[in-house]
Picture 1: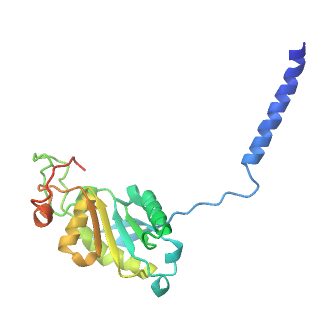
Picture 2: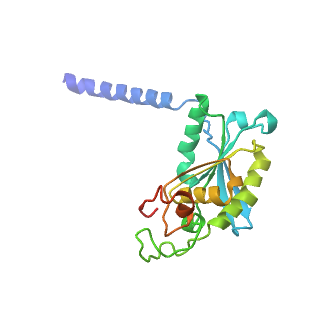
Length: 219
């Protein structure tokens, strides 16, 4: 009898607690969006297509010009690296390890291999014929896009200091090294990792062979 009498009371108490928890979890003030950067699109005459890019813009770099002389980091494979890259810049600049820095992240479109390879080949990393890189060899056109279209637009919009850092990994690293050798004025500092193969580019022969030569998996 006691259990039967207490059951409705327990249910009523549980319902009241649930309602209170929901009220507490739903504040009267609306949630504000958290913005990590800006999305832009540029129409490229060089590439014949619209190209998106993302910008991380710290508070100290928003004014531009002499009042906010910030360098710019251009990073390839931008969709993969934007979130952690912006976090690293914010953390390191907050600890006074680096200056505040604008980051321009350049995503891939339909054909990453075309954009991020300097020379055309149909030979894979294993030395065998493969259809994978059949569209390779568009790297110089991609660098033309950066040099003649994207960088001028970024510099006109944000007025950074004339100090650029170019970063890439895997095939993006290959393109970063290619730009360092063929277009040294494109950036003051280049950061690259991976992506070198004698079958895919002459970059290893011109920059690193025989000091560094390795085979890596298909990127």
